[in-house]
Image (cartoon, rainbow, N blue to C red):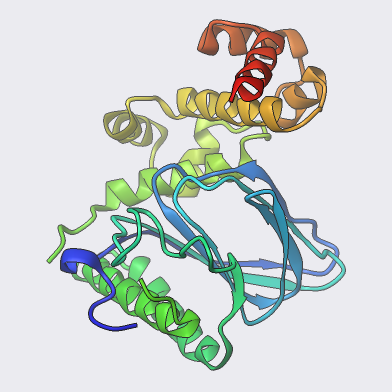
Length: 282
């Protein structure tokens, strides 16, 4: 790779970073979801699993990097028979030379790939970025963003792919963290209090900043996202409507149907039929 990695010297912004751990016997799977506004990176340090993206299944193991470009639908399954650890981070404002906005990997590059000798240095950089991201000072936030740029540059070198920003505020990062939690746990009974604990903000403060940034309350956003996932399942699977309702967090199929009609103007069955007819005409 020649020249600078980032187009117009615009650096990305870190939205969240976390180190995820599971003991043997602890189940961890993430159902179908996407991240509409940012790119997600997973660095696998322990354990194995499978991710499904672009209609393909990919095996991952320690030393692998998993990348989901912005808006890419994906799901993950891990092997619960052994301990697992994943270093996870996501960023927005990503403009890589020669690639569309919100894209880190070219279409010809696999979404799961080993990074070889770069693994240890990237892991060290990640932990530095994680430590800075959890400090309170404005300087720490800016350092974390610069560390992100370094990590991405290291990763770009590892995969050998040819292809002075405003500081992100603590409130923006908290909303991103809440969105990420919703994207990953939408099938569960998520409450505002639970999101409050996740972001370390009061329910009132979280609701206020969440709506100011997204236009939705946290619970409205959850419902909207569930409907987007349901539409995806309706068009890409043969699952029954009752099954889809359960998969997106509804124990009552009539409740799901009423909500779906409110959001789309048609029943789930009508939406599926219209989608199939549109596909046939193409």
